[in-house]
Length: 136
Image: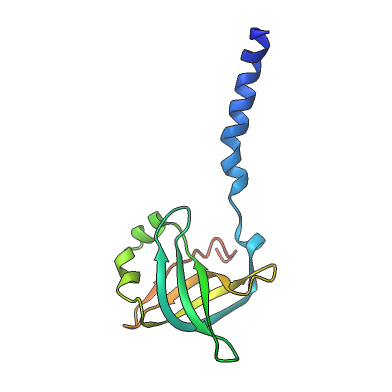
């Protein structure tokens, strides 16, 4: 009996190690590269964490109603290597920004994958990856 348990242990361990690989998604599963546009609104929040940074912008819809949108960016490490810090977002809370992003699939109308973020001071930050969007 004990011998069978020891033989199965590597198999069980291998399955647990593979789980994070299946959990990660690709761009094309969640977002539509054919539906990218510029969106302008007020930056309200940032979730500076891995595996992806998320930031939130209040946008007005066609009926002039304000809705909070969630934008997915690349990882903290990628942003830091590009010279982008959390403070860049914080300094622009409450200010008007423009996000270039691709809309989410599946009817989720307030979620998008960000490519660039133009700050109130005119700087444009690359917060998405061309590789994820199939442009590399």
